[in-house]
Length: 391
Image (cartoon, rainbow, N blue to C red; front, side, top):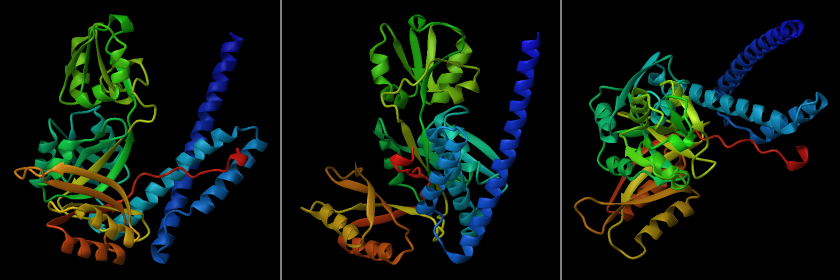
């Protein structure tokens, strides 16, 4: 009895300490927004990675003096730094685009609650609005149509995955839309095998999922015997189906976080082919945005060169000569024009810079067709590196 009372007392102290930590986290976040306000007037970059590295080294040393593991301190403060950078960027973007600051936004995404698109949408807009009006859609085309018609403010579309590659259907839709890409977010994909009831892996006879998770978990699935695969329009649809069946022989591939919305639990975790599995999503809207000068930007455009030897190489040389880094090149066939390709290109540059303006002008002269799909803030925050000797 005494041990139980001592344990309850310790847990109460832990809860009190956690509350103190949350209060301090909120105080630190408020201070970093004040930093963003000062940078808005001085036009200084959001990130100062030399200062971030020095900060981490100092914190690691202070942590060691308190008996804290260096990797633990690094992990915690890398997350804090990422949050700080993203919040500063969101603040500066609202100053540059006053119309973006709204208490409520409406968003279309693939599937329903629990889908990866749903989770990515909430993660992206949680920094930008107090309330999100959700519109789950059965297809990528439906998402685009809702935004184009003005029924929702934004659409969130997966564009590529580190395991299964580019999502061609989305690239093809971008050829024929007037929407602009206004943002991006990279979301971790943590595939689990989820069930509605307690069961064992050898009891599972049917697995439901969207096509992408099946591809990304092929190694795990190949090891299972006698499994029937059922394709669904989205991960959310698959989760709803498994919850409805309440059967020990069925399971779904999805995230543990999404599964909790359907009262599902993880039978097997981390079943993807790659340990580091991420999907990149783009955010589309009817109007483009301006990217604040302090924020690293990415510009996406498409072009068609015609069937001329070396034409694409000449285009890429323009980017090299202007010192513009290309981070993505994707080709897709042009519908109705056999053997001709449309090239999608992502570059790390703000469309408003002189180098990018000159590059677009020169590319316009060299190509049959060119169209800028959008310029938007880079939201993938590379963790601040720490010298190995500091660890």
